[in-house]
Image 1 (cartoon, each protein chain N blue to C red):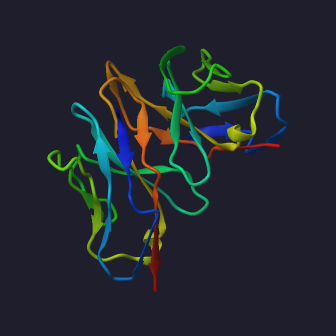
Image 2 (spheres, chains in turn cyan, blue; image 1 turned 45 degrees about the vertical axis):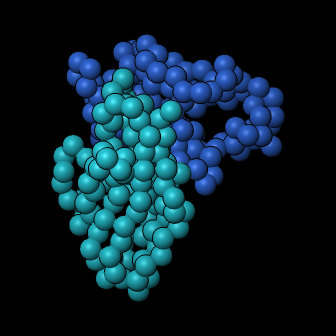
Length: 109
Length: 115
């Protein structure tokens, strides 16, 4: 079964601390993995995707097929990073996205 | 471009009623997808439409239906509403080229409350 698991509902860190939001997936094949972010009172937006291997707002994520993980990392958290983060998987059949339940990141001053 | 737009913003319905939610995609986007987001959960896929045809359907009962119009806007219909249908309904549009589906851009959602 296709599934995305985000084990932490809430992650609270202090400004300047490293952040790692965990994401594990279950999929037989070659999925596309994404991280979406939703800031307060804003719409869901794409943060990054594994195929582009880029860093957005200081965040990076590496696809580990052996561990079926796609953890989101940032070396130094900022207060403006506080938001809901969703890991998502897209199968190779089309555009359907399968989301995890989300992790709320709270960065304290 | 205002991005993906959805109407109405909020809606309150009674059990057993039906509801129609509307979505206008970004100009040039021909694919529209619908998601249901229950409080505290991630979005769950309901439908995908491309060129007015259903291209995918999630695990939802037949009470849920949708369609896409020639201008690529879309409607989501839910009949015989249940309390459990209370959720934020998200619409997303994307470009499609061949078999490739590009980034999905989400609308602000419609908050449906069933009493």
